[in-house]
Length: 266
Image 1 (cartoon, rainbow, N blue to C red):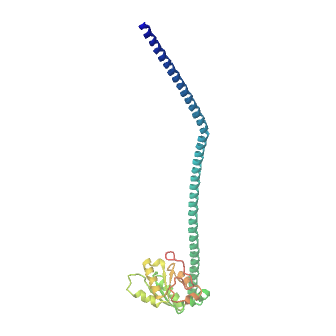
Image 2 (image 1 turned 90 degrees about the horizontal axis):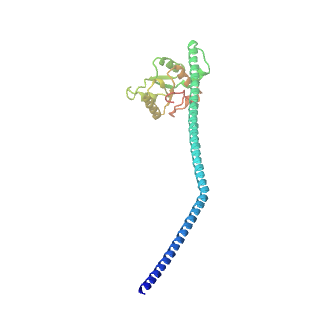
Image 3 (image 1 turned 135 degrees about the vertical axis):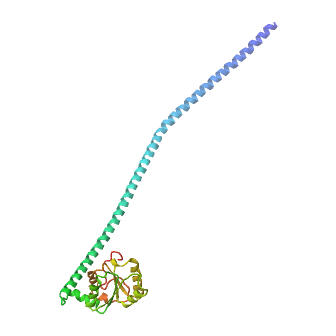
């Protein structure tokens, strides 16, 4: 009797445990199914999001490519423009230099023409003492009664230049132009002169600067000559007579208002 009661209680407990186990298994099955559904839903959402983002990502990639290509093109065009500007600037500088050289050569040619004409005149005067023309009259007007100081130059040309000045009524003195000469001698000679002339091819630069300072201080006109030849000297005094009368301005221009071209001192 007692054994039957125990068996009944054991059977009841087993049935209850089995029922609980079944319920737990069912709940676990339901949870797993719910998890699988969630995972599947998440996968679908991920696939949909990836598919939706793909065109936008592609657009961004293409936009980035376009921006990089545009930046590269801008850099290329900028470099080309800078090279073109540099080339244009160099061409302008070269053109300006060529124009300056051309102007210098033009003035140099004109000076040579004047010197040649003056030299021919002196040859005619030496050949025929009575030969007179407009150029001779200009030399008379600009040299007569004027004291000419000639600084530097070559000894071989002194006599001809001196004779030219004396022949046209002027006075002539010369000075070697070197800074080693006796102190005060050049300053005294400058104060004596109406016009100081010096050929820049036969006098050093330091002496030229010293001579210009003396002339400016004493308000004596000075004229740089291109060369020591008599033709250059005669051409410098073959312009209109008005400029030859001006005194005490310390100007570099010649009696005619312009000076022969000086290749080193202007």
